[in-house]
Image (cartoon, rainbow, N blue to C red; front, side, top):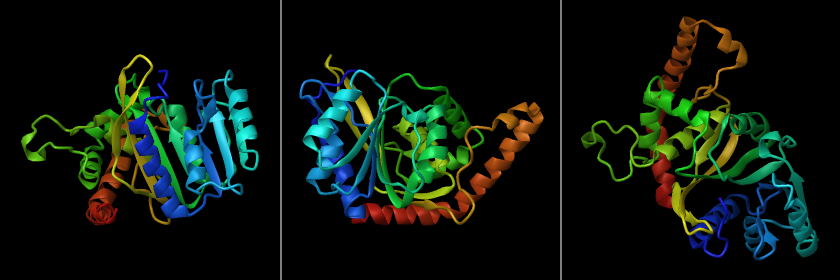
Length: 302
C-alpha cells in the first residue's frame, strides 16, 4: 500500500490522541521506539516524532530509535533527522522490526504503526525483545489494518478463540465493549461482534505480553487511511499503558506452542491445550468483573 500523505486527517486525529495520552502519562519520554516512514512529496519522516517534539513529549534528552525495512529510503530518513533535528538523539536502523534488538529497560514509549497484521515473527519479537525493553509503566500504541491478507497467526488465534479459548474471547469482548452496536443476546451465530480483527489483535498483544500487566488506556480507535489510488483502508489503534512485569500468574495463555511441544502426540497436545485453557478461563472468570469495572472507570474519566 502506498499512502497518500496529503489526505490523512483521520490519521492525524489518531496520532494526536496517542501523543497526548503518552504526554499525560510520561510527561517527557526517556526512550522512544517508532517506525518513521518516508513522505516523498514533503521530503520528511517521522510525523509522530515531529508531533511528539511539538508537544514536548520528545526532547533532546529522549533516546529515539527508529526502524525502516526499505533500504531505499533509510538514508533519506537519517539525513532528515540529522539536518532538521540535529539536537535530538535519533538513530534510524535499516532492519525489519522482527530482526531488531533493543536494550532492556530502555523504552518508555513505543508507537508501532504496522502496515500489515502481526505475524508469528512479530509476535515472538514483542514477547522476547519488546517486552523486556519496556520500562515500568511504559506506553505502547499499536496500529493495524483491516481487510488485508492475514497471516497464519491470525487464523490460529481465531480458531482458538472460537474453541478452547471461547470463554476468554467472551470476557475480552465484554470487558472492552467489542460487540459494537450488536445485541449479544439477539445475534445468533455471531460470536465476533462488529470487529473480528480487533478482538484477535487485542488477544495477540495480550498473549505476547502475557508475563506483563498492561491496561488498555483508551477506547480502541477505528478509522480510515487513504492510499494514492483513492482506496480507503480501515485501520485501528490500541493504546496500552501501565505496562510492568506481573507478580502473579499470567492471565493469558501462550498462543504458539514451543518446538518441543509440537513433537507430542495428538492426545498430549490436546491435554496440554486443555490445561492452559482451563487455567486461562479460570483466571478470567475470577478477574474479569473487577477488570471490567476498572476499564469503565478509566473510560469515563477520559
